[in-house]
Figure (cartoon, rainbow, N blue to C red):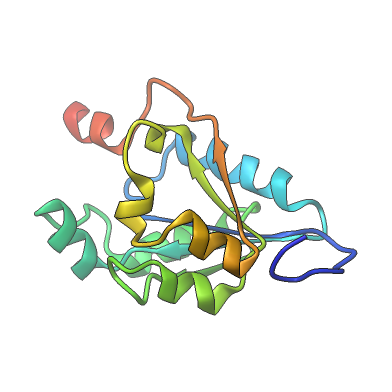
Length: 149
């Protein structure tokens, strides 16, 4: 079963991101994470800090960290929000959460997610963590919202 073998309740699902300008695509993705976790499971969002977003994207998020965290914590599908404490090395935050599953959207399928997160399949296997791609809601993104503005 993974990081919490023998657990009879749901799974602990980890996902990370910036979640800037929260939109329907974010809500749909987090709903899928909740379904994956199960009713008794947990969905933990590792939220990128403003400093990390600025360094990675070359500009700060529209919505500051505290406000993004508050919005995510208010979403019924989210159990808790933690800061992405490792910056580009996601292993730090993942190890703090101890998930059974890391969930990402299919937008990453054409990119090198392993390189982005600084881990390998062998590392995930060694931790007993399953990587799951969840379908992305097409036609909506933070980038698209920024373009509308």
